[in-house]
Length: 466
Image 1: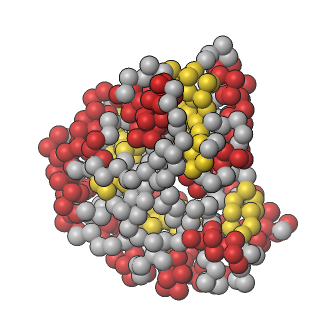
Image 2 (image 1 turned 180 degrees about the horizontal axis):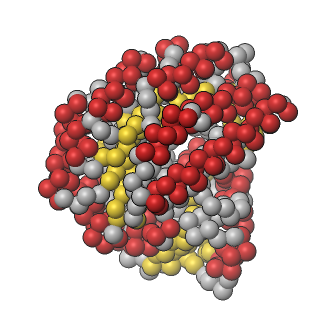
């Protein structure tokens, strides 16, 4: 039996984060390792709001056979700092997650204190690696693993997700997680499917692949049973990219929730492909509070450029039906698409209001490593990193595409114009206040609103300075 610690690194600096969600990937790894007989713990330093000094003190005097860390590229500097701190406390130090997957050919060379990197879906590789470490067996050539000897072959995707144990949420600080669109009470996240068959150029499929694999409704309901009974969860955020893809499964899930009468609320995400009104109404009765759609653009030229395979009219109809069913809507919109002009991006902002989205997230198109967009941006000399200007960003610099239609000043200007024109409308503010259901929700709404105001006006001055 090995002593294993899995870590979600601290933030660069402690602040009052509006969104703090469970690191499901670590919880899945912990459950798999524990089922294999190992002594596993999780330190979610981000959720616990640990300073770097506090993080170091938590590890003081501790020794582990294996420490595993995860991280995304935009905040990988925090992971590298954690690696330095963890090295004296681990016989073996392992990295997994999106950054390790995207940079699997160079990650060990760039981080000499690491022993291994896991790429792709990690559960099976991690358990096999722990067994090899425990038994002193060679690890070179193991599927899904990067060693100092080289890169192992890709590990096949996990076809039957029901074979995975449920995430080890008992190892997480569950009372610390929060999400702005959730109601009162404890929240958590669930993932009911993996993979995406679509080909958007900005999307990284490195971990979960292109084939959509879903758990059956009964398996998902069993996990909901656990989080309600064991952890007192009142709100769930489904983290699937394509939660609504299989309508039969979705219907069975909603019917199961209605039979249980848990009275939980939940948020999910999907494409703007049509969902029948009667199914949307069933979702609402089963607790669906908010449905988020990847609209991306109001311009067909932009949608075609990013490979979305949707139309603006599909988005318009999806929002109309969802609103009619009584479900709040959220739209994700992308600004700075190379094929679009500044005026066309303004059309996307207008469209977000025309479809009467309840919430909107506007992001600058980002060429993240491992995506077709990244390869294209680097090849054409379009790749740049500029100061982050998305209200939700936690990174200091954000990769962007600087093309014939977009320079840094335009990108800064458009993203702040989007938030100002959407959120600072008197009618929108009044409607938002009228929807408030509790004092706690009012406080959260006011706090978020003040954050948007500060963001918009600080951004206006930066845009003028640029």
